Length: 182
Image 1 (cartoon, rainbow, N blue to C red):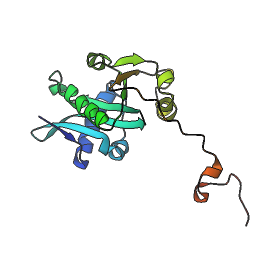
Image 2 (cartoon, helix red, strand yellow):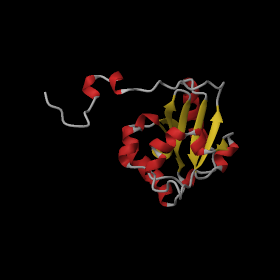
Image 3 (cartoon, rainbow, N blue to C red):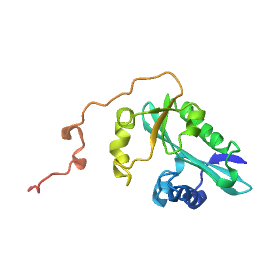
Image 4 (cartoon, rainbow, N blue to C red):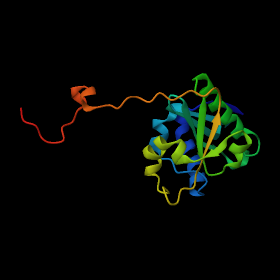
């Protein structure tokens, strides 16, 4: 069995695997386009040329990354494959200098065993809630995920940029709210 970075030829199998679990409401569904757009963030596990697992690490801020889309083929579960995929993502997070990772898990037991702890989603990850969760068909009343965090190193205070005003943007980016005449 081999853990490696995902390739373009893996996307359709990743999609099949992830949506197998989404159909069972054990993961959130992933669009094929989302997997292509985020291919660089994925690791896959393969055995004899067959894709049998995947996991993604996506940087979300200067001190935070998210572990997403962890799935292992049912025939290969219980053999440490999920842990190996997660370790690949955590190793990358450490190499990038990211002190904390989080996940939104439906099944929390696996993540608890490797040191993640449950936290309040809205309190700890408001950016995630308002950029992604808000588009989820289960949000907010039927949310099926638990936010969990794992600290990898010394905590750093997030650098919050100052408010951006329209005058800070290049003119080509400013879109008038009303028609203009010249």
